[in-house]
Image 1 (tube, rainbow, N blue to C red):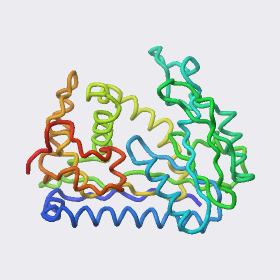
Image 2 (image 1 turned 120 degrees about the horizontal axis):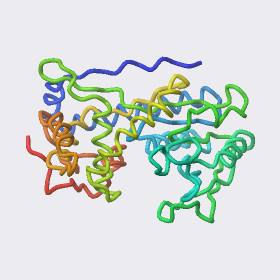
Image 3 (image 1 turned 180 degrees about the vertical axis):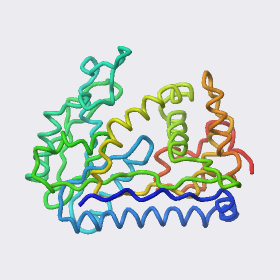
Image 4 (image 1 turned 135 degrees about the vertical axis):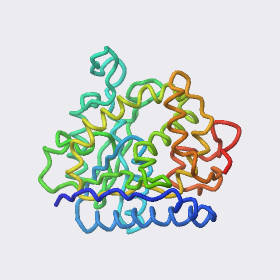
Length: 317
């Protein structure tokens, strides 16, 4: 049975700043809420008695960490569970379809090795195991070795951009998979009740930070790419989101306080106006330091373990 996506929550900046007087308590609350959502998702998967979970969500929604946390919870309940990423099925340099501008299209369905992917999904459904490819992102080609996925009697969690596309699972029996949509469900209002921060703003701040710290990309690269990312989300994710059996909320009420420090002072290069506009949206929130984020938080997917803001320190209150 498909479900309507729950409405997004609108929380006032004043309420967040009031709660942020005790940052450790606000962080603990946010982390506990996320953990409860993961546990509830694991319970729902087991209750469905389906052995294949397809998990998707927009960019920087926390798909990778959420998929792994879900698999961990299933294993805690005594069943085998592993995660298989659709990114490992990329066809490789020289084989990607082209965008109208002549560049490689990494986000269309045909960027994946569909025959191999369908074969792996059928094996996971039929016998609970398969030998999945490993993509070497440095070489931009599939690696020679494979990874054995063993979920016999348990649940395989498959995560990626195209996880809800029926072209991946249409060869499987109806009701053989459970679809989980991971997305942020909390937005923020200014002091006058105006919508200040939308979920796309939060996801952009997450992606800007991750690209800056770990992928060698400055804000110019990320902001130039962002419209294409959003267009791909509309085409390949949101077009199928009504297929969701369950929605996993990946919001953390404290994170505007975190992204304030990362966006404030991040150079925007050719997109300086856009960067300043985004930073201004976070400017009214109380600041917090990255070391106040727990080491096992999902948000560590975007800030890493070294507590390094992109400039000398986080913004001040």
